[in-house]
Image (tube, rainbow, N blue to C red; front, side, top):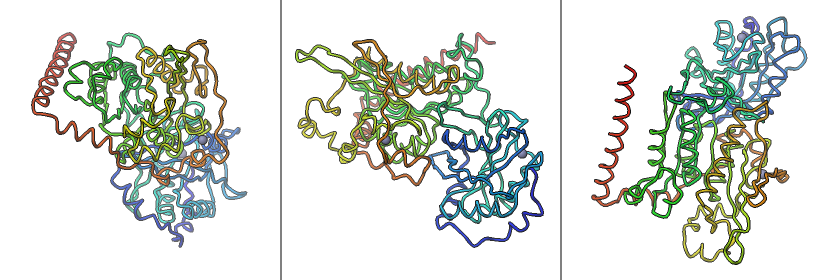
Length: 535
Ligand SMILES: [Zn+2]
Ligand SMILES: [Zn+2]
């Protein structure tokens, strides 16, 4: 790209338009160190079609973005291409633009409370593009004006000829303005396409003891799977199995969310949990932690477990740090939270569930399990009938944890059902992992297969052709990020569970410490033997 030096002088005159929310936005971002970019398949197609020309010359464009603020990570959600009007940009091997184009785009972004994107192409390049000195100078000029007009930092995007993106966010103001490299650019389309910044991510080779790679799609697929930040919401029978298998697959950043403790009634179906865990009131996420520590094949594992519900403000905020979520929750409120951020924050959610039907004599009539990827372009969970929106507020009010309320519900209410047979849970886990692998590894270019329904009695798989109802609010919120209606609030059941554990008797606390020490000793022993063999 050519720096429009002389033309930019005019563009540096300070425009009068400012965004009223600019102060808080720019303040918050200064404390963030991790940045990422996400866009829908539709936004990606519009940008790629414009930037990658048939004549293989470079091109440029402006677009808008909206912020999505996680706990540690700030994501820029790329929204809408602002195509140049005739004469506003010039293509001559490389590309340049008239200041009017920049001003028009920045004013449009500022007026609508959005940030400005400046994108250009490197048709001869491949993979993540380092910022060269020419691009740096040009983007710095745009960034100064853009942050004044929009109150949000400029997002600089470069597109290589292999359709891989690279990105940086220009933080600071005036002379102190500087680019911060993003860690990844995620495109949430029919396939999940992520370009990782190799300068930030180390090469994530699996441990040598994993003799065979899980996906035989080659090193690229393994590298994507291992670097993807995957959250598992809910570690019951399905979630715990998925955590174990993803850790063994080599995913290096798994986040596990659950507020519950192991109980005796869970033991028939909870992988990795034993009698002692129930007696010691161990949080389910700490059983997951043990599975992660024992089974992870990633060379640099950075797994995190959270004794939180995804419905709590901190749970939601931490969830926004992930690239993909596997939903193993069955209540309406957490499903509503995940449904919300799948569209608003462009974080695809792999979701599923099980319904069993009994005959009057109590024997099994049939069972169905579903799997789907919730994302723009696919039906949402509410329209698929995976939860009843009316029950979300009922759950927020705490009624679903009130035995008298539950007792008054009809027998076939989804809230009363608890179909958690361990053997069928494994089938549900497999269905979710199949969706995950297909979406990420995209066998022969086919990614998301759409919602599927497995029929236990007939041994068939059916495609669910449901589409969202006209005016579905989730589809209307794609990419709105922090402007979403907040689905989180205090979660009384989660708070109660944590309080209950904090008040556990001294005997239990001491026994837990002894048990933890035994586990640590086993791990230390394994590490010592491994080091001995390597030397
Ligand atoms: Zn360039
Ligand atoms: Zn819908």
